[in-house]
Length: 293
Image (tube, rainbow, N blue to C red; front, side, top):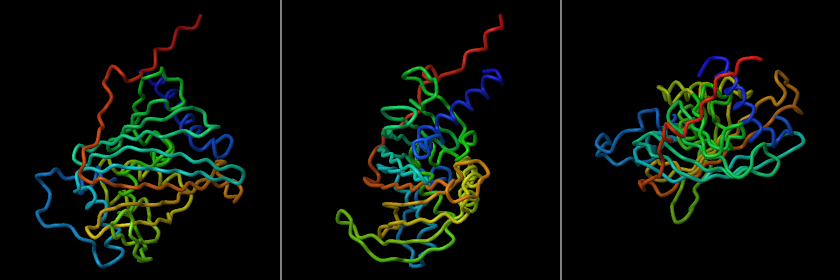
């Protein structure tokens, strides 16, 4: 692909991603896979993991512990709110921490630039999107480096992928134990605090840190509020993270701010996840520009 066409495609997808998620809210507008928790089955410690007594250690350590489960099913919800509009996206899929790949299917609400569902396949530092709203042929995928998306793909495809959502907790700066809850027969500890995406990226390292680092440069609030629910093994069952950014470039006015609340719930730890990279023949490439007449 020549450089002018590549730039045009990236610009097109950026606009489409915002339209699919953020425009619906405004009317216009690692991760586990990359960090030490993504060990193969043969590399896992024979010592059983358990929840740390210290709240901050428990929250910071959950990405690695969750990664050692091998895989997990995921349910996502992403709610965007501005001064005038609110939109909700829901998704389902899973993440394979051994193969370092996940897949999500996200339902698009009315009013977005695309319809139906957005399908997303994620790897450390890379995302494949299908039905992203850009002018991509039906059934084809577009491949992007997450650094090409202003938010590092933490919210622009309608969901925060499980690896990134858990990886962000490596940057926890404050954590307090709120209480205990029993969900689906599992006793969980509920924590609340704030996290720093730059610290999360540093702790994650590798390509899995790319999205976290990119998002940190876009979101306006350095201290990201979160809530997390962990089981006795220290595995992450649910995390809620609240991101903020300026809907109008450069504006610090409250009326121009957009709040995005991302919720990721994990279950069925260790069960197989159906996720694979699209075939090379299914990847869309821009055609060379026709010569001017």
